[in-house]
Amino acid sequence: MSFVESEERRALRAAVSELGKKYGYAYFNERARSGGQTTELWQEAGKLGYLGVNLPEQYGGGGGGMADLSIVLEELGAAGCPLLMMVVSPAICGTVITRFGTEGQKEQWLPSLADGSTTMAFAITEPDAGSNSHEITTTARRTGEGWSLSGRKVYISGLDVAKAVLVVGRTEDAKTGKLKPALFIVPTDAAGVEFRQIEMDLISPDKQFSLFLDDVQLPAEALVGSEDAGLMQLFAGLNPERIMASAFAIGIGRHALGKAVAYVKERQVWKTAIGAHQGIAHPLAQNKIELELARLMMQKAAALYDAGDDLDAGEAANMAKYAAGEATVRATDQAVQSLGGNGMTVEYGVASLVTAARASRIAPVSREMILNFVAQHSLGLPKSY
Image (cartoon, rainbow, N blue to C red):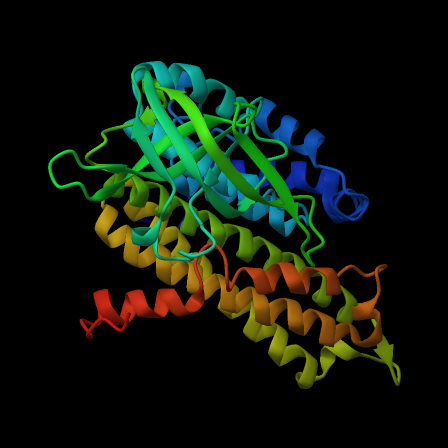
C-alpha cells in the first residue's frame, strides 16, 4: 500500500468531485426535503462508470476495487450529495454476486448494477435479531422447483428504488436440522413481497423500510453461491459495507468542515475574522486531523480487501468505520458551533448534517459492536456477549 494515490485515482477523485459540485448540497437537500430522489445524479454517475468502478470489466464495470469505489462515495459526500445506495448496490450486492454468483447471475445483474440502471437493496437486519446475524429467523425451505422464503426485515434502505433485494435468510441443514445462513436475490415486485416506509427524523432522499416476505416463491437460481458457505459469503459483503460506510461518513465530515472553514474565514467580529481565534481554529484543525486519520484506516481496509486478505480487512474495516463515525459526528457538531446561530438555519445547511452524521455511529454496525469486535478479536479479551 502506498500513501500516495496513483495518478489514475487522483484523476478519479477530481472527476467525481466535479460531478458532485455540479449537483451539490442544494440539489441533494431539495430532493430530501421534498420527498424526491437523486435519480439524475445516480444515473449520471452510472453512465460515467463511477457506480461500477469496483466491478469486473467483463460485466461492464471498471475493473477496480473497494479503494476506487470508496473514492467515489467520499467525493460525492464532500460535495454535499452522498449516495447511500452506493454502500448497498455496487458494494455489498455487486461484490457478493461477483465473488460467489453463478455465471448466469453475474450476466443478469452486474452490467446493470455497474451502469446504475438497476439498484439492488440488501436485507439482513431483523426486529428481534439486531446485529446478531446468528439469530436471523427469515427462513427458506425447499420446494419442488426452488425455494419458499418467509420472514421480516427492518431498516432496509432504498426498497422504493430497488429492482431486487439481496436477502439474508436461513436454510435447514439436512443432516443436523439446524438453520444456517444463505443469501437469495428476491425481486421487489414478487408475489408475497411487501414493504412499508419507516418515518425517520433524517433529512435524506434515501428512505428506510420494513420488509415482509410471506411465502415468496423463488427459483433455484435465486440462491447466491453455496448453501453451505452462506456465513462466509455474508461476511464477504460486510467488509465492503463497512469500508463504504466509512467513505460516506468521511464525505459528510469533509463537507461540514469545508462549510465551517469558509464561514469563519469571512465572518468578522470586532474587525477580525473569527477563524483567527484559537477557540475557533483549534477545534476545526482537530476535525481535519481526525478525518484524515479515519481516511487512512479506510484506505488500509480497502487495500487489504482488494488484496484478498479478508481477515485483516475485517479488523481494519471495523476500525475505519468506528473512526469515521466519531470524526464526522465531531466535525458536524463543530460546524454548527462555528457558525453560531447561522449554524441552525436552513440557509447555511449544516444543522441538517448532524443527524446523518450521528447515524454513522449506529449503522450499519454500532460503535459498541465494533468495540466488542476489537476487544475480542484484536486484543484477545473474553467474549462479552
